[in-house]
Image (cartoon, one colour):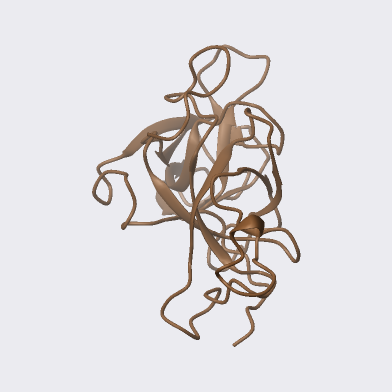
Length: 209
């Protein structure tokens, strides 16, 4: 069954090396006037050029990540109450937004690859084309305001040691499941943090443990 182009961001993968669900979440802050929307599954990074401790939606590149956004709460200016949400809409907060972020340096995430880069052309025996062990870049995509789900996906492999992720495995089962066909485009892979705040050693990431 061919995969479909349905990105969903970085979803925590509980069969990986990270902590138990919710154990690796921390509260970080988004500035009330940050107009950039942030969705569940989006990579987030420290605000560049400011020593405020705030985070924002990450831009693809080699900037060190803070983690993966999984929701937030804030005092809604319009509703006059605390709102818990799967995404930050970019406005309507009185005071700082408390963001829930997975930052366990050993966490694993399931994510969709793009149309050409991350699948194995042919069969699983063709390890020369296997993306496992390669550094990976992401694209932010478009989030879904109805579900609060990220539109991020992986879109490049390379040897750049400061790319934010590294591919650790392929999704191949159960057969016929979404994204489980590694021989066609838009397959799903498992990644770990590569360039992330708790993993950086100052000269680049320390690598996957």
